[in-house]
Image (cartoon, rainbow, N blue to C red; front, side):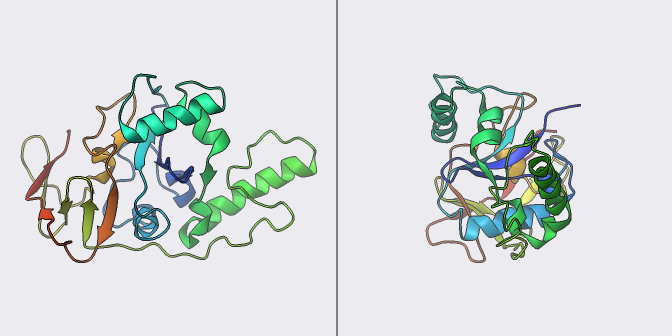
Length: 224
C-alpha cells in the first residue's frame, strides 16, 4: 500500500489531506507545482497558519521521546497527552482537525466523507471520527468558501532563505533540472520511507517579494 502523508500543523492541531483534493497521498504524489492542494497549503501559510510549525507527515513512523526537533517534539507531547506515546498518526487522526473542507477545491470529496459520518450518526454507529470538526445540525456551515493561492516565493523564516520557480533550479540527483516538482514536500517530509526533510522544524511562509535580508536559493537538490 505504501506510506500516506498529510500536511500537519502542530501549533494549530490541524491538517489537510491530499485525498480531499483528489490527489494521491504518497510522498511524491502531490508535489506538482501549482496544484489545488499545494495552493490550499500556501493560502493557509499566508493567513491562518502563518508563523506555525508544519510538516509533511507520513503515517508509518513513530516519534522518539528523545526527539528535540521543535515540530516533532511538539507533536510527541501531544501523543503523550492522549495516551499514544510516539504514535503521531493516530494522535493526528483522533485529536487534530482536518481543515481541507475550508476550500472549494475539496468540496466533492469532503461532502462525501461528511455524508458517511452523518449516516453513521443517523444509524447510531459512530465508527468514523468527526475529523472535520463539524456540527451535525449544520454540517456544512463555513465550509467550501476559500480559494487556494499561489505565491512567487516560498520562504523559510528560520533560515532566512526562499525559493521561486523562476529563480531557483530544482535539480534531480543527476543534476538535471525539473520543470514540474515543487520541493516543499521533500524539504518538509517526515516518514518511514524518507530521510527527515532538512526544513522540518523551521517556520515556512509565502510571499510575492523577497523579504528584506533574505537570500534567494540558487538551487535545491531533490532526493531522487
